[in-house]
Image 1 (cartoon, rainbow, N blue to C red):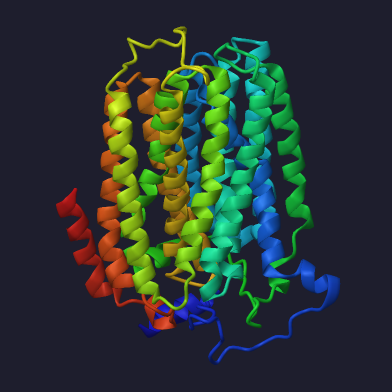
Image 2: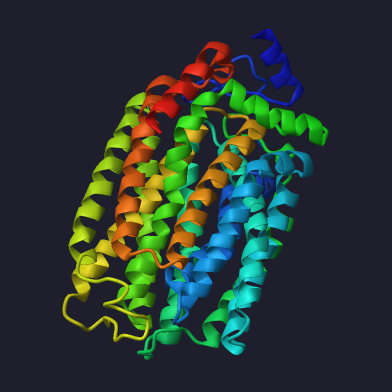
Length: 487
């Protein structure tokens, strides 16, 4: 135990505050800056800026992906690009925590944004040159590496700036602004394509998206240095010491060794990108023309804002114990999974890939039956935001230290992206729609089942240093035996 504590100290770990109210016990308290400087260095301001980085880049990527097939008539190129993207994302994100701790969050965030402009530009190239599919796939591979960097830096900053009782609020603020990017992107697409009854978007949509993502690349330059940040309770945000790569990779191993319970969240992480393939391609792209797809896309991301803020509000109710909040969120997610997929099942059984080819006449916004189908899509958006927000909150309940949170965020995005790679690859191989639907339902339920023992054993009412250095020598073998038995 002493050796583990010493290793965490050497790696720059600090559990931060250990009370639900955010007051520090035995931790130095700093005076908060005043005036304009105080506004700029306020953690909420920085999380808002972080939200706008993701508003401009991943948010618009989501708007494009949410159209189904990247807005194209044939979804094959987009599915192959997404499979490649998430494969490199999965590989890169696993080590992105080490990169973040070595380079610092602002530089990591800046590097991560660049891939989004390249990727959206590749679809513009594909619209102009139909044989540019290889460029789209290569851009997807590059974006995967960049996305791993961006999301790891984002997770580390968002969770480390908040006190214990603010994590749900900060996640909700971030997720609302981030998804507002997808809302704006979907609005641009809807405006561009409202009078179109075709099944693909025009060049103007891609050009608009490209300009906005280029603006997003510049935002990290103007963000505050994390080393100068003070939380609202007066505690200073600890930052990694930028050790050698060897020490950083050892820190990656140490994080898994000292906190093996995070492994039980891996199925939940895996599910969090798997369901997009069915929602975007097998439902939105398969059933609707471009006008309806654009409107569906808009309400989907609006629902995400509502979902993230509502579950974040629940998760921050300090008059309820943190364990009760965790179990309450788990129950809400389980209920939403069954509501959405039981409802959607009655629509999915009505069509297949062969009965509804890409060139077929699709459902329009004025057609009979459209209203009930868009309601399903709204509930899909609510479920997505609640799922992602709860996953982040569970990570935040395990630690307050930015270095350790960077590793956790890297694990999250790596496993999440592995799920996305598998789902998009299955779609590119024309897996039957019903198979994709059932796999989505099963994986979501499995994610919750695996997370339940982690919530019971690891989520405490207060985050303490002793919680972060569990006696893993006796715990780890049993945990892996448990996972092996279930699999």
